[in-house]
Image (cartoon, rainbow over all chains, first blue to last red; front, side):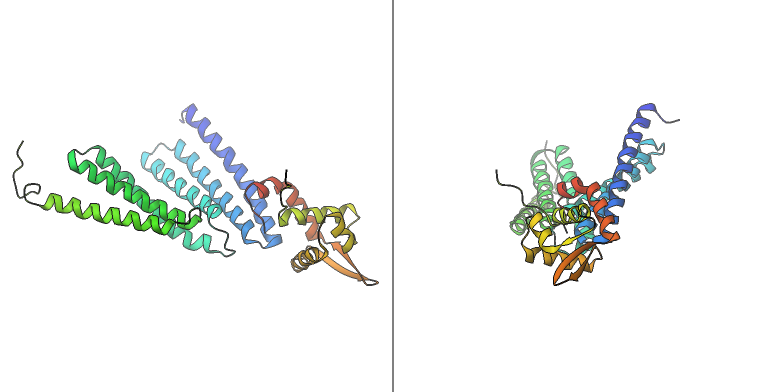
Length: 192
Length: 93
């Protein structure tokens, strides 16, 4: 039996799914008439947003936690793909469907690494907390530079990427050397 | 306030609307004047739309007459429905 509040949430998700589907079908019809890639971008965007809403609705009502989690994650990926097709620069080709997905996948992993780095930092103490926070933050910067590159919202994305990489590589090197050095690694007893 | 520049799709909608209101066809010069377009710009757009089967161009006594096709009527109906989506999401063609 589905909880009433879950049912309401799922219903709201389904309403937007239907609305997004109607918009995407109209845009596909317009694309058929005009053969314009820009119109196709809109159609792809609304199709993916519609699918994302559908998965979210099923995720809400699913009783199996694993299924709910898988649907939830897939919903986010579809929404990101849909929004990317709108945010990608207007290059007049189908690149937004192909190369974009790959870059998006990489940047998502950067954000995951960044969030996990920050979470690990929160649970750590002393110097490790600072190192992990810096590494986590640098992954976020790397992800941000990839998004900036894909969407064209920022000119200096290469500088941002290089800066993020320098910070990440340097802090990783210092971090590993610090804990591998005598007195900090597993080879020496730590004094309380 | 400076008026907002019309998108190509907005211009196409205005042209199709004018043609429909004129009984489905009108001379190119009149379409250009009524819609505030330079004749050359109109004809380059018309050439594109002709290729997509939206409009036909008939020559009558040296004058170019623009005729809207059934595909053009279908396009106009879709553009009317999607006007806001197209404008707000920047989906020009």
